[in-house]
Image 1 (cartoon, helix red, strand yellow):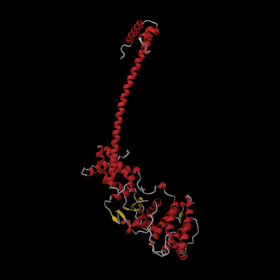
Image 2 (cartoon, helix red, strand yellow):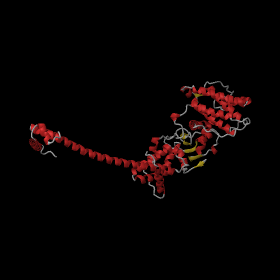
Image 3 (cartoon, chains in turn blue, green):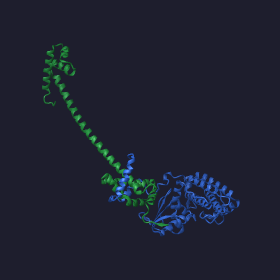
Length: 313
Length: 186
């Protein structure tokens, strides 16, 4: 483009004012062709504020950055704050011990250490039950032990994750969930519990950087259909458009059940801030408190959010 | 949660940045006529104005994150972009027209030169042929005078003849040349 002279913008504004002053606007004969032409330049879906797929951080690095935030959250707990309540109805100490234990369990699933599975626990889905004995032990040992165990396991896990092969990443834990998705879920969990601890100890919440937020938003929306299925709330033939604005977001068209016609318009559109939607999926923001614009079938909104929250329960 | 009918422009732009093409459609419905009218006013050409509308909304779709609602309205932002592109287009077309006119004139001039050069070469060939056909003494005198730049006196000295004889040989030779070149345009 020709370099803009200082007076050019002034002329532009005068022209705009003239048009607005009463000149009747003429409709251009472009219609849908204009949007189609625009989509040739940029595909719908990915956000301009998210990390492009080709530039996504390797998952071990996502984990490492999330671990730094978690460690910082634990180090900032004051001596009298370990008994403060968190949104999960557990104390700061219990939540810190829980997240440490769940990472220790994860490490055992990928051969990076041992973990004593409590009697009666047969699946990773027994998320809290698996960690109860460790919570009791670490609480008894005190804050230093919790911090030390947490530091040790994030370091051990990062080393293990860095050495995984493609086949390792694709391996399905209990035949259900890939190691890759499970790792993403642990990163999500570390963010949520870290923020919960910060809030409980009077500190502001911490948004992940763009690279991590992109991964978290992708996970939170991608798991909606599976969450709905696990809850028995699938909506065959229905589809939701989830538009997450801000850093790391995007537009996600999500089937709410089977037999969705690809040509069908979305039954509901939910527009929300990326971080807030993720926090809603992570149980830090209730559905009633989520600031969102809704278009279409409002009755589906509860389903969509329930699906997003299914793995955080 | 809030229901929304017509979302404020800022939120629609945020949706565009987030990859929501339905928001782009909505913004086109709201501002397409304004952008077209503005572009038409500058370019006075419907085809050009349509191109500019497309350019502006492609720019919105690919650079929505550059819009800052703190600095002005979306209408102003789109309007400034449209105006710049319309002015650019008009300037480019004017420059192209000026260049085409210069090129055309240059082409005409070149054609005249080429024609004149061809004629001159043809004439030169005929003159040489006519010269070769002259008697030796007349050709020698003419070559010294017209191609060697000698005066009548100098021609006489070089050829070792009286000056009057030199003039006579040159005059007779030129008459024969004219006779031989009769019919060729001067």
